[in-house]
Image (cartoon, rainbow, N blue to C red):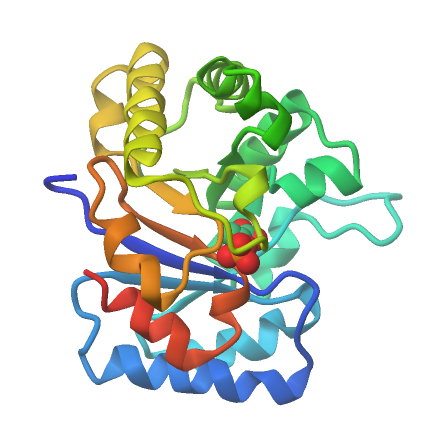
Length: 250
Ligand code: PEP
């Protein structure tokens, strides 16, 4: 989108130990060498690696983020991590509402909205995920689902600075399947229009990422679609060479 600097974000999911940090070093080197001066880069490793990851990318253009946060700042929530803790560990962003969280942990739109607000409270940017399931697409209800998720989970105080939207068709995540360029264009245009309803002029500046089986071989096609302002990359973000090749699609 004209005037929007793209963001290529990696989601490592529940993958990675200290040995994986070599890939992050290689990603940082790639961005330091200026090859990818056209895009911003973000890697979201598991929470256990966040502080070490932040050390590795400090003084490089690459940023690190969390994959989820609790809505509260602190308290009796065993196993959870707050947005403030992510920020303290060096995160600039946090993914909220990923479909795996919605499925594995029963996250609702209202819960995702609270997590986005928690991210802002901590001073970090929310990468808020929405997307339809296979059944919803087959029923022809994709656009309705996106509308409902936006209304339910994007707070009305969202700005281009504090929020990134990621459109991730659930059936395309980790499957090797991708929507056609025309389907991506339709979904992203619809998301932009819904954001405009909710946020007014700010919507024109907001990044809308595409996610779901992005890899080097399809990145140029998917990322050149109108209203696609970057990618959220799962599997292919674990390998520096693949992640850098995707970033070079711009
Ligand atoms: C994701 O988890 O956000 C994702 C898009 O995964 P993958 O790229 O592996 O489909």
